[in-house]
Length: 357
Image (cartoon, rainbow, N blue to C red; front, side, top):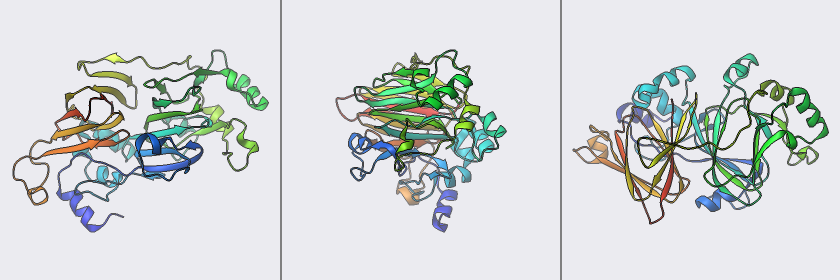
């Protein structure tokens, strides 16, 4: 439960851009890349597989690390101020009673279990305690020989897949890709997928932690590192009609610094190139930003007094600044009218911009 002071602040202070404490998950296929790439304070050799950057879920709840809402959870925030936070997306909170999007970083040094996420309809049909999800991967780093598997090859039905699983060799049925830095893969609900052998990913997804593992790359013989499988639920959740799948093709937008990577039922994903500076203007939705390469400073003109005088010490409308290095993330409410982004060095900053639809 949040403290009385946090509850008071949530009701009293206007909204502002939020930073959060990462939530680390250790799985057998993880490694050390998130510590080294992002200069994180993570113990060497901890086998960190995932960093949940922004999450409102029972299995991981983001905690605010800046401003007067320090110590509040993301759920505290959005449940107390849904209209002012979401703007035109407030219906999404009404529908799910939680923030509808998650952002993670994934370090797949070994192979992630071959898995599938059910659709929302399938999750309801199976009586699952969580919703289905669609997600997207953007490649942050890739060692030579790293692999992404996305979707079944044509003409592979359930019978053929079950046979391959019994034989312990399903790889020949999967679409196999050698990822390059910057590649983006849309993994729709029902699509079988995996990644590994030294690939680091930014993962954007609908808020859910529901995965069915169908194959663990024969790690079942290693009791220490094996993970439980949910073969029957996975076989029921796979969309066997999904087409062969490859990296997304970025599309130009009205802003020369921005390309659209994904627009789907769950979210919109844009990539921005900040060589020196650019200005982003609000579209009455909240946005998640994260820095893939380089570092950048975000300068916010937050509109009519967004920080109370007794907190900021300023009577005029304040200008807020946040400095984001590689791997840093931030959640911007719809009340933020614009951001001026500025690269912090001669190296261009590459940013992802995630919002609802």
